[in-house]
Amino acid sequence: MTKAVDERQPTLLARAEKIAGEFDLSPDDVRSITRHFVRQMKDGLAHERVWQLPSYVRRVPTGKEKGKFLAVDLGGSNCRICLVDLHGDSTFTVSQSKDSVPPEVTVNPSYRPLFDFVAHRIADFLKGNENPQCVQGLKDAEQHQTYNLGFTFSFTCEQTSLAGGRLIHWDKGWDIPDAVGRDPCRMLQEAIDHLGLPVIVSVLANDSVGTLLTRSYTSGPTASTLAAVILGTGTNAAYIERLSNVRRLGAEPISDQIMIINTEWGCFDDKMDVLPRTPFDDELDEASTDPGSQMLEKRVSGLYLGELLRLTILHLMQTNALAITCNPTSRIFERHSIDSSFLSELAKAGSDRAQTTIQLIKATLSAEGVTETDARGIQLLASAIARRAARLAGASLAAIIIQSGRLKMSTKGTEHTYTTDDDEQRPQLTSRSSMRSIHRFIHDATLLWRRLLRLVGMGSLIGKPPIPPLSETKSSVVFQEDIIDIGADGSLIEFYPMFEVEMRRAMRDVPEIGPTGDQRIRIGMAKDGSGVGAALIAQAASEMQGAIAI
Ligand code: BGC
Image (cartoon, rainbow, N blue to C red; front, side, top):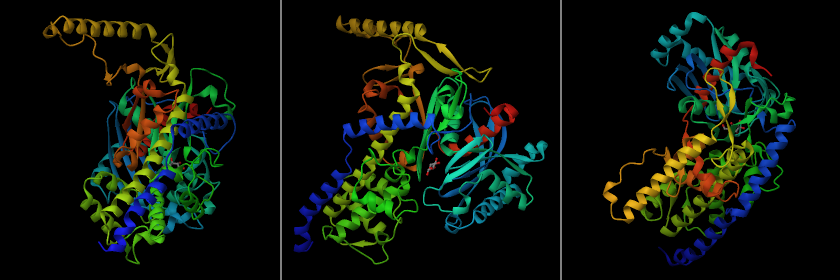
């Protein structure tokens, strides 16, 4: 290390710490964000807004659904064509093809190239070019002659029914102006018809809604799944709301019915009343395809976290605090060229594997002269950006849980919970308090008895408790019926170490949730749930036929 570099290093850490501090979100910040989001959710349920969008899905799967369905999952980066076989026992198999969507069709004056691309992928899939197994699957399903297709479209869409809707705006950097205001199902159908394929686009679903349905299907009827969160290229969540609260639809206040709501939480607080803001957030937003829009998403999702890190590193380089030098073709000089996986890798390397971190930085940024202090500084920035994202996601999930009313359905007092009746497949109000009280009484008495035996030195007589709790944490017992189940999908929650831990810390900062509420929340992966979810909606639509609209 040269002397000049050496002298810069303490300053670098102080500067990196200062910038990292700008990304801090205090417990008070979390609380006011959650409160504001609950208000926004209520407002979106009552008035037509671009968030809290009704999905028209009015029941959740029980795990018993059966059949083969074709689905297209068009996300921010990939297009997947899937043949989903629902086995009727909470399991499924999927045969699929997956292609990256060419960038030139995602930013284009016309919608046709994008939908032609998707239609061609469907044609390839049907021909079985990609996967001979699919052909067999489709032959089995051929009694219908035409295939009903469920379309998962991961962009902000106002649905007008299960079968269609209107694109409100593009997100995740896509920009195809003449698609805005049109029905994605129709645009896809047009391209499919052009190729003469025997396919009818029969349902439209957001990926968050699809993920919620998949989680419910795989968890079975007793899991009481409440919501699903997507924390990948984009971010969003869907949850189960009482239909009587969805006043924007002018629905009759029928208390025992539900509707899944696509929150589109990525655009919560676009007015920036409570969201945190650093100069790097502003720079990112100004250079985006949709300034002033998706402000939460721009602080939380994978598409933006790498870019935020790039901007902070570049700032430290330009102000001469970082000692590294980068090749002119380095990604550090190119917008959106740093993937959020870089943040995950930096976190995995930790602070005690300096050489691994240095190598990672050199390889990712085509950089030279990376010192241990540089590596530490970059790690500090990356973890601050990711921690803020996780805490914001936690604050948002807390808002959903509060709005859903599930926390009030606790083991104390007389309470009711929404469950799905298998036969009717409609939610019913079910009182469970007395069963729970008996269960808890026996369990507590057993614990007391075991403690007494230990005290009098007869611990060897201790057997297993007669009623084992289904889920147990360090300090208390959580009964199955109290669990608030959340499905999750996306690279951030799957691969970023501590993402869920930080989300939970933030949720505990919200008094309505606190440590007790946190213990009731179970977050489980519903990987690639969006395609399967579209198949589940197609299955429901085929059963409900005309009875699906309000
Ligand atoms: C879109 C949502 C989508 C989310 C996750 C966001 O950009 O607005 O509709 O669910 O990304 O894919």
